[in-house]
Picture (cartoon, rainbow, N blue to C red):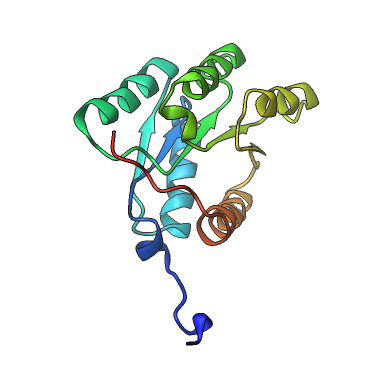
Length: 158
């Protein structure tokens, strides 16, 4: 059997759950949504805009038996950096949610922010690009890595 003859597509491999984007800036959300629609067509994207709303969404998913997101793409400054750290800590300390890959997205390239993100167990840290074209290229790379290269654990029933 030729394993290369049948590639796994975005729509067949990752239709289990949406991507959760935690972004409090409406302009950045517009750009992120635009880039994700172009690079991951058919994948549902859910937006929350703060720590409390995000935890409510995730806990509602758990309580109602809805699928959790495959990935969480979280802005660090919600609007303050401490808000982003608090959300990341809350997710990573929760007995069920800790399995979610959280990718931090920030304009900050400060080495201390990057160090702290990995200390708190983020799966990845991405510095936000500055132009539309760069955003699209960024999310093409994101798709190739998170959708085509990485193998994520299957969600278990809660």
